[in-house]
Length: 447
Image 1 (tube, helix red, strand yellow):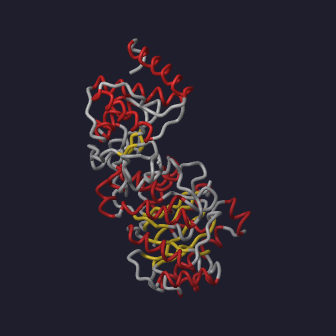
Image 2 (cartoon, helix red, strand yellow):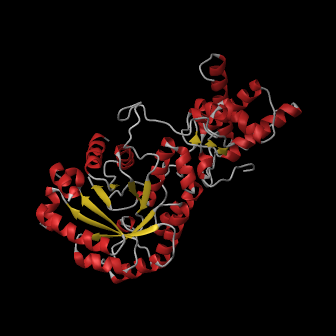
Image 3 (cartoon, rainbow, N blue to C red):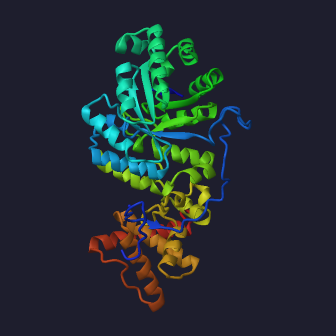
């Protein structure tokens, strides 16, 4: 039996990688980040003290893209798409797949039955109201477990279902006993837990700090599994999920890209990122992390949204470095600015070298990729030319590569041919900008 807590409130030489086409960027060798396989948050609860209640290294995921995700404004999954998503999530390694209530519509019921017949490794759950009619329909679909939900806060008791705590307890007992009699898993979810009275919550379950303390107290009262379901209205869903695991929760609800009602819930990719920092070995042994981008692309296409540029792990900029000092450090040791190794997720890091912010270390790395060797002083002079061009207009990887190649040819031939085909106006501006940069370098004002 599980209890649930529902909280609402990117040419000529260009690297091609799963991240996509990064114009103006260069993929660099993905090396192992030399950080420990497990790390601890020094600012967390009881920092430095191991909490025996913590389930950070033994959590389970209830993947709710096909239930909570179906409540996303743009979502419409036909049966074939639901089956495709379910199979992808199962291949990834999630423990449970949660489906929309079979009571929602005839098609929802048919879809539930179809997915139950797939023979997936993941257990199939469905999400129903705390009502015997719903329970009877749910158990007939062949699911492995049922989530029974009812609002327990005074807000929902007054403005949603209109029932008091006595009714809720009696209804919960009746539904739970019925589902248990069918030999399948049951979890009871108190919707809006964090606006519910603590005494009410502890009473019904026994018949960030607030998250941590509530789950910890609950763990001291009940011996069953504790599932948590956090909405992302204030951007705290991942943090709340981690706090809950620290305090003793066992199961975390997620959805691909975090899609769901309003701003959605804890995103699968975001939780993977956080848990990789907490216990890399556990996460890598349990989940096929290299499948994450494939799953996100599948769901993003299905709901007609773009994956955000800053998306955890798979976003366009997740492993992209632009500033000169960042690029230098990353080229020397990736762990300077990366807490996660992109290779663990089948991703590639990039250095954005075609910009006014580039540094000579990035240009040196790119030139060496192009098999063009120069002295450090020459790399620096070439960098000044790229920065000068980038001060005039945006430049792409082809522009920067052309400058590097043309500069190298001029060095070898002793000629001074133009580095790029420029208009007279652009050439004049380029010469002026290059002089400014070289003068500034000589004065020690730029590097």
